[in-house]
Amino acid sequence: MEKVTGTGGWQEFKMFSAEVTAPVRSKHIVFLYFKGSDWLFNLDKFTLAIPPYLRHRLLRLSRLVTTPHQERLSMCER
Image (cartoon, rainbow, N blue to C red; front, side, top):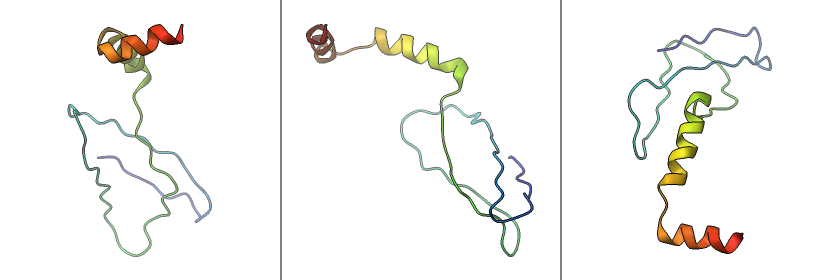
């Protein structure tokens, strides 16, 4: 669980990040749980991303695992 601290104003934003440590497969519903009273904060944007250290591995795997349809498409594009 990550702690989100105040910024000092409604139009002053900070970036916070946290890692997803459980194995993730398939689709999931994501919940943001906030504890406190009154006006907690103004959430501007929420983004899920693949960590940089995994991007090259996923790209390499995606090249190895292709369907015949994908192979035909890539041959036509050349």
